[in-house]
Length: 355
Image (cartoon, rainbow, N blue to C red; front, side):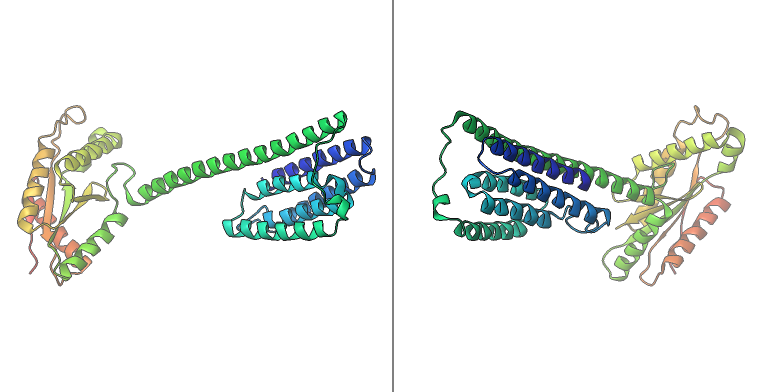
């Protein structure tokens, strides 16, 4: 993009040199002026092409080095004013093109500084002109000169328009890239915090939430309950029907539980067929009601299209967070209550309070 923009600057110099050659053809300027102007334009392009090739400014706020390019271009125009003051209006109009280029990346502070310095330098330059060249600009009465001046004026307006359009295109692209980046950030965050198969939260996402709830309980803010949930005899599903069916069962179980749970409840896949359910602002008795509702919903779900010979049920070990608990204490107590539910025959919920 830096190279393309520099090429556009080169094309603008070439257009101006061509118009100056036309002024020479009409005997308005000497041949040296278009040649010198073209040489200045080539020097501008060569210097900044070398700077860009060396990588200078690539990682900065302004990779185009807009301020330096504007200063160079304005200096060329003011120098041309001194060399051919009788057509100074043309060069002063080109400064508008230079400022249109600057709108692509200058901040308001930089733009104001450039405006003030350009006004000052222009005023100083005009002071050095002979008095006869400071008269008001008049429309040429020669037909060929009038056509040339009109074409030159039209080219200046067109370049300003194209630069403004290019700036609009850049802004649209920037907005699109920002939206795409925001979508990618959301997608990456979801991959980092959710189980890829079931869409439930993953272990790395739920444990910080549990730690936060423990801190809230320790401060006396609210109660909190926790449950470890395990599907009963899930190995039989994988062994008898394959892992693909097993994955479908896991997904349907998660969908069934999410449809039954409250909005504040947080469900995570803890590992394999084991899930962790975090229930903020919930007492042990209330958590038992929630888990019984979940257990019955899974047990009464229709599984005939996936497994015809096996019931799909779950066991849950429930506990609550105590003020003196650490993370490992809560998880160990929930795990103990889950094993108790398994030992008592599965397809049941067991509560274990803190001592």
